Image (cartoon, rainbow, N blue to C red):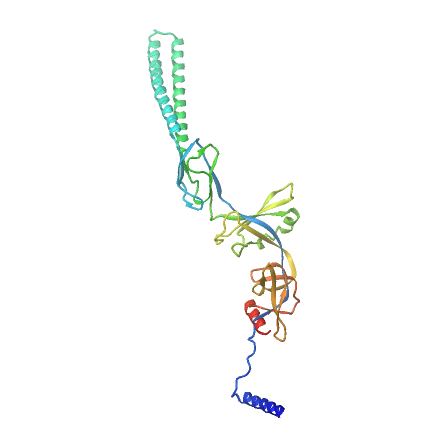
Length: 350
């Protein structure tokens, strides 16, 4: 009897579903997928590099004295000629005053020597003095003139030294470091500030000599990636320095960053990639990659719609949208483009 009831109930449900009186049983929603493809892409050589400023200066003291004023801190933007700091100028001011006093003394001696020369010339014309007296007066005049010129030069030098008490920015930029504190003793040559121009940056990388030879003529296809920014840039200019490092047998390559490289600053880690030819690589969309702790993987969807997580060994990125798969997938398989939705559906199916 129970068996008859079950059969009757099943027939009734079937009839209701067929007539539309009962909704169909829910099925898992479709997950967007992409095929695992073996494609020919540019083979690249990658080299670790660092961002540096094309225009950078270390502003050092040119005068000895205590730092009596600091006007900027690290990270601040400064204009060309802006005052950065002041050094105690009292000693330099005294030296300038002494030089100006020497000028006054030299001017007086010069005026006296000139008057004596003119007087001796008139006396010689009247035969009251000898030619030797005129020669001595001329020598005294020349010596006084030279002493006056030396005094003026010394005063100008003292004035220049006094001007070193005001430390200014050599160009517009950003203060990367402030290396002094208020009250520190400044010494000629002692660094005080490091300033760089953020509008002109480049990436420098060391490339093996034999690889540099392969890159010649192909550097126009180079790219620069800055992981901290999550962006890749096409350098606007590339320079290969002619000299090689005798210890590492590498050559330094400079890649100038474009103006739109916002957020980059000196010292950032970067990678430079150079195209060296063509190679076939197994690729999947970068958005399909999912990370579990430090394990990379992807959700593979088979023909029946079943979803399984597959651990992968990944290679380098191919452009901005694809990544190379070294192990874990085969050509023709399909991976979920939305790992979060694929995980939710996989759990719901269990």
